[in-house]
Image: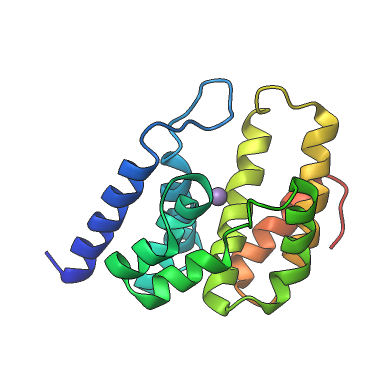
Length: 179
Ligand SMILES: [Mn+2]
C-alpha cells in the first residue's frame, strides 16, 4: 500500500473515532462521519483534488468545531499544514451563531487556497443534503436562509475550483439566487 493511502486511512479512522457518537440532523440520523468522508470525496472525485493535505483536512474539518479535538492535537498527529487548514475552517464557538455566520462571509476571501477548497466542498455537500431532505425542526424558510447565507460565503471563494463552483452556482440558481 502506498504511504498516502495509509495516511488517508489513519485520518479517516481518527475522524471516525472523534465523531463516533454524533449524528447528522436529517430525520434518519445519518452517522456524522458520512459528512466529512463525503466532503473529501467531493474534492477528490468531482474537484480533481489530489493534494493529500487538503483531503486530510476535509476528513478532519469538523473535529475541532464539533468534538473535543484541539488544533494542537491535530498538529501533533497530522502536522502543521493539515492543522492550519482545519483551524481556518473552524468557527469560534465562543461567539453567538449569527456572528459566526457573519464572520464566515467576511473571512472567506482571505482564507488560503487549501481552506477555500474545503469550504467549497463543505457547502456543496450541505446544500445537496438540504435538497435531499429537511433537517429535523427546520422550516422551508430556514432552508432558504441557509442557501442565501451559503451564497454569500461562496461569493468570497470564487476563483478556487471551477468544477465545484459551477455545481454550487446551479444549486443557487435553482433557488432563485444569483451570486
Ligand atoms: Mn462540515
